[in-house]
Amino acid sequence: MSRTYNIIKYICLLTWAAFVVFPFLWALSTSFKDANAVTSGARYIPWVEFEPSLQGWTSLFASGSQGINIVTPFMNSASVTLLASIVSLSLGTLAAYGLSRFSYKAGFIKNADITFFFISQRIMPPIVLAIPFFLMLKELHALDTIFGLVIVYVALLLPIAVWVMTDFFASIPKELDEMAMIDGCTPIGAFFRVVLPNSTAGLVVAGMFCLIFGWNDFFFAFILTFTETQLLPVAIVSLNSSVTPWWSLSAFALISVTPLALIAIFVERFMSRGSLAGAFR
Amino acid sequence: MLSLKNLSTADRKRPLSNLDADLKSGKIYTILGRTGAGKTELLRAVMGLDDISGGHLELDGQDLAKRPVRKRQMSMVYQQFINYPHLTVLKNVAFPLRRQGLSAEDASGRALVALELVGLAGFEGRMPSELSGGQQQRVAIARAIVKKARILLMDEPLANLDYKLREKLREEFPRLLAQNADGIILYSTTEPAEAMQLGDEMIVMHEGHILAKGPPEEIFEAPSTVEVAKLISDPPVSIVDGKIVGGKLVLGETVLLENADLKLPMDGSVKVGIRPDALSVGGDMPATVVLAEFSGSDTIVHVTFEFGAAVMLVEGIHEFAPDQSIAVSMDTSSLLLFSEYGDNITERRSDG
Image (cartoon, rainbow over all chains, first blue to last red; front, side):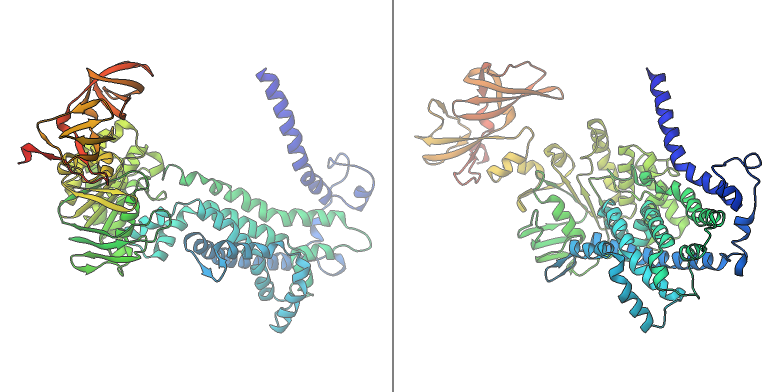
């Protein structure tokens, strides 16, 4: 019974793993093909079914008609995403702590309304924000600049950070901060010395969300930049011409997905809530 | 001295109303009350964690209301085991000392002494999550006493422990609390035995009010009101309606009690408090068993008489069936008499 169950279980898991891994293998295989190998039917195994070529990879570091240099867009994307994520996470964590620990009231507006206000920023379709952002950055002379994109991305990522961290702080008993104050901390000291060190899991989740949304955004990167500050998702589209270079696109896709995958693998260990377990009952 | 003067809070769940008390240094005050009586709210108000809506709170004549929590020279042990999850046991206990400006070395030295005192020597390198519930609470207690605070607040510190651990730690408390011998200790509990055992003085609370305060034995012997009588023992004092007719105490229609030691008031209605150990099996009062439960080596029997319900504490383990008819006798010397409004009017001839 249990052996049959195990066999079925592993078949299911392998099937699912194949679904998840196969696109990456396909992209990896395609990135080493040339035009001929891509268009002449399904071929998967290098040196047996097709002759591997580095054309897809070299074209990403070439310039002019040879391809596109992705180093600059990659660095732009990394700068914008990292800066926006750090600012969003810092401001969002402070806002979330305030919302989870103190009561605010301005007329009929209370804590829950403020939290909803933050989250509602993500409910709006992005197209609604496109023109206001464009005009705003134009006024600030920040169109097509990293600074302008960081401002916009902070506005987009802040709700995510506030949302995740408010929920996380709600799970930390407020007695912990009180204890820190009883033991001699100021309220802000209690936050930095006690609450924040116990919020690693929440910070990692919120940080990952910010990085993923920031790194993958195409819409605003497309609308608010022209030629000076191209981001990775926009650069990948510019690869497309009359002949779709599948080999370059595949290499590009793999390069763009790698940083997030590496970060996810690295921070996975911090995502357990176990660090809080057993500390309060 | 900590003075509560007409102290009130506007807590939505359990507001405190006009509390007055002078709490002297070097004494342990146990606060006894049911869940929701306002014990935690009182401790939180003293600590400065909840705002005071009226009255004054003074420490040695100085107003505490404006003093931030961190400057109140107090420490607290919560009902939940609150420790800093990211710090080792040693760093947890040294934490308040470090905030006071002690060097890491001095703080660690004092923390080690405190840990030894609570029986956790050798555990200093562990994380709180690696300890059992009882050990976690010991860490919290060590952190509270290491400061040698002016006021030590303990909010039902044993409530989340199992019976054995509770008993063990309760036995150790007098020795541990002696560390704060110069301070004022406020210890809240729902258990009358704990309040009696630990307190130099007892404060009985109910629905946000202080009902009684004084030495535990005095409150136990002469509870000022019906509510206090209900709270000061477990199983509780049973309250039944009675009347005084012609110098005799009548319970219901048929039972007449006359006791030489009890000075009975003028004719009229009274409430009668029957202590659980005043009733015993065997006698001339018919009763019906409602429920019998075992508590340690005793049997608690809930019975109904024709004049009302009462709880009886019987030594040893005895089997009683629901609806079983039994005969009961009552030691009337320990009866308590209350007016119709609930005030204690018991007078004994032996009191003079």
